[in-house]
Amino acid sequence: MNNLIVKEFNGNKIHTFMWNDKPCWIANEIVNMFGYSDPSTTIRQCVEAEEFEEGIEYKILIKEELKCFKRIVKEVTKLNLVGSELINKYTSSLIIFYEDGLYGFLQYTDKPIGVQFRRWIRREVLPEIRQTGSYISDKANPETLREKANELEKLETINKSVELVSPLLDVAGVDNTVKLLVVKTLFSKAGVDIPIEIEAKEKFYDTKQIAKMVGMYSKTGNPAFGAVGQIIKKLDIEEHEKEVVWESSGSWQGTVIKYTESVSDKVNKWL
Figure 1: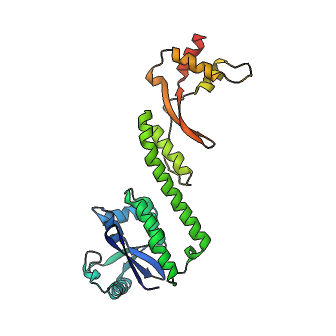
Figure 2 (figure 1 turned 45 degrees about the vertical axis):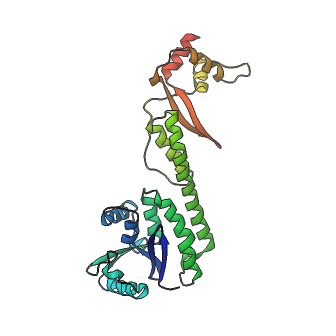
Figure 3 (figure 1 turned 30 degrees about the vertical axis):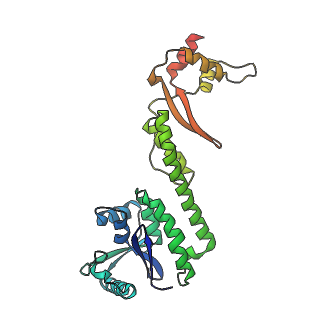
């Protein structure tokens, strides 16, 4: 392939270069396009947060490598990019993202445009790199490419699910702890672990559990949770004694109301 692919995304020209036989992007151009006020700081924070390894996800070009890259950029673009804000001709170092690093940044950013840009890269840029011939790596393996595409599609679906469910949780009156649990559950289905432990302030029980606690069973020997629910409606239950909780069971997901142990005591006394 040529050493340059130029495509337009949302009115911005995005330059894909080849370096060490791998596609790369000038980190500053990508981060600038996302609207960050301090791209250098954002790049550094991303590299640290995502634990990038130099040579794998990114590369810091200095000295002779930087001179060579600047020369390539100037030759293939036929433009004076080297003297522009994209590459200052006096800069002593330049960070480029390889493909893994670009995906890492897109995972790191919280900008909504990230999902759209990820789809654009996958559909518009990477296919052209493969079609033109000289980009050879493990990502050229069809199975690997398919897995990567499925992973990204799944993450996009999860992001959309979070956007859709958040207003519903607000209407349901659930607190921030429950919202975080919902997000953790959704992302876990995509294989993404959110490293935040959620601890309940107090243990809550559903009507089935309360039925077992107070010894209420139907003629078939099952917990009489329906009867417990009717009793609870007749009791004076304080707001702090109940909580809307997100749960999932098999393919079902939704909210249920659970109660504190004090409600179980009230049901027991009512009996």
